[in-house]
Image (cartoon, rainbow, N blue to C red; front, side, top):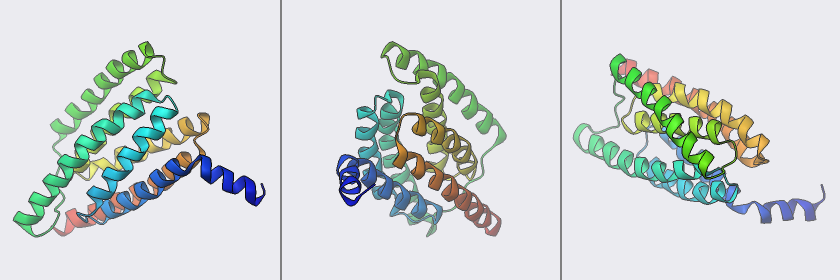
Length: 196
């Protein structure tokens, strides 16, 4: 690929590139439990809403709408915790809550899959399942549960294959990086939990 080809690639994929950069920065700041992660994540959510809509990954596009809501909630919830406790503290996740959330993810997979199929989305059931469990992971992240990182690792690994299949190469590379960040987040949040 020559310089013109590289320049054309970035011109054609600038939105995906901007989403990639803001997502990496937002997730890295989340692993550090820094409140600034939320406005940066909000920007990434909006950018990827457009990217996924253009790729006709409708469950992922809809997922970004939910991510925007969860991001606003997480921002408020973490900010409240910082005001009351002086820092973002990791919260334990009860087994009953874990099982309920996983069951909700399964139900959401079916409902979103049926909707996506009716809308003629690409990969409707796979995309819906990943979107549904991403909502579970996002909820756990907003609620400051360490379990969010383990679920993100599984979901993001599967997303890599989906994005490669849909020729979203930058996004596939992004999700490989997100797996590494999730491993880092899991380690750091476990340490924070043990220190509390």
